[in-house]
Length: 236
Figure 1 (tube, rainbow, N blue to C red):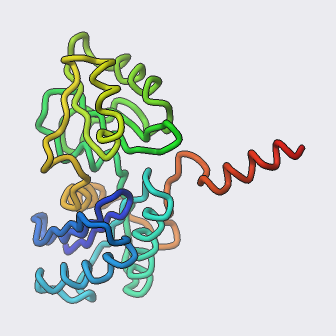
Figure 2 (spheres, one colour):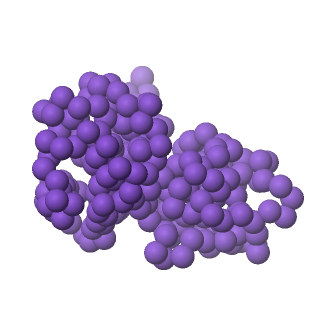
């Protein structure tokens, strides 16, 4: 089984190819170019370096969120288009679960967080395993509320390991709130690895759907919609 997976949900664009249960290719663009510019050339390179033609892909996968509204749409749209053209199924992968999958060997509670802006994080909690064992559902909330929820499911004095682009924004606040209980993923594990997306898609093959059913997962309305609702509320 040959699987192509992409991630454009956060600041790093990623592509991975799985072939018969092993990683055949992984590429990540840690640059300031937009995902719409990076994605298709990265997919072409992934297939070329894997020695595969697009017609040989059996399953397509994309991170469906949570994350950047525009970013998520880029990856999902690309995969929907390729799956439609090839007549092949596709599978959605949760961004926070994929972040946790990159740290599955740790004994700490894994706390993936993404910067949701407006003073909020997208967060969840997992125990190390593969696939990760979920302790909390994905939520968009203030950091303090998120930390309270994590502490409610962690064992007393259990370490909490934070990973994701939300760490850069909230690390100081997390350290002030948790002290020595707070751990942070090392730099090489701090971003969402496309290989983790491919591995989870491979593990969740039974959840594959037709391209029409693949859709972004948003935990809150886009900024434009929230701004419009606020404006309409004031006018009312």
